[in-house]
Length: 334
Ligand code: ASP
Image (cartoon, rainbow, N blue to C red; front, side, top):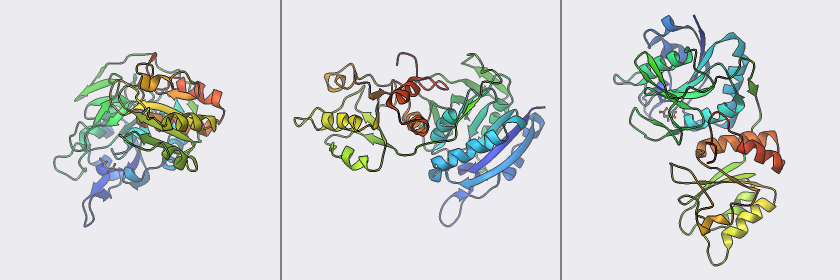
């Protein structure tokens, strides 16, 4: 029987109602005890790493989860991480960069309703995560939620209330899970057993800037004292304001010339960014210091740039790492 380590971190799944609202209270052991059948599927060990609302999950916590997986990597065949849904996509992306080419599956799950709610989705999500984590064709970091398996770099929380909380953005689902059956949509090569690469440093000085009409380009200067990288969410396929004073042009090229990192993406959720299409974007497309996000999610961009800047501050190396496809994070040609 396969050995699975379940790492509990909190979230709605563990939450109970109180005077001040829902907050994590149940332990991982209690959660596991509520899910019939999982101990018949695997030899299960539970590790309580923290018990927090994922709103409070920070890069330092991603590293703790990474350490828990890597510290026990040899002892287990797979890992299931119980996590709040609100920032699960960030954590899944971060783990995808911190733990690369893992033959052993690392699955994140949670629920929209607490385990104690009579109509909870927690039981099926845990059950199917265990099922997925014990399957021979599973590998790398993924989210398993509401019968869908999503690559760790492609998840987005798309709905605040429905059980169907997560979508796979700009990339097919890895699999769908119907009761006990895993139907694979992605059947690519599996990493070799010894291919694992791990990292343990992040630079969290990364800011996401969403353009809105009339936003002032001075914001770049205000951010420069606090951040090393900006992820710019442009309009549409890649529109950046061309005001008469050329303020954005000056701010963006000034940011790059100061040796800082910028990645350009879109605020439109689907189909990605292409700076070459419109005049209001094209001038930025040829500059090697401006990183083009293609069809990556903003969550993955945040995690990837934190990971890259944790490894290097050299522009050339930043570029190379940025354009390398990791755990399906960007489509070739995007
Ligand atoms: N606020 C909760 C959390 O992210 C929401 C959830 O888990 O669904 O921890």
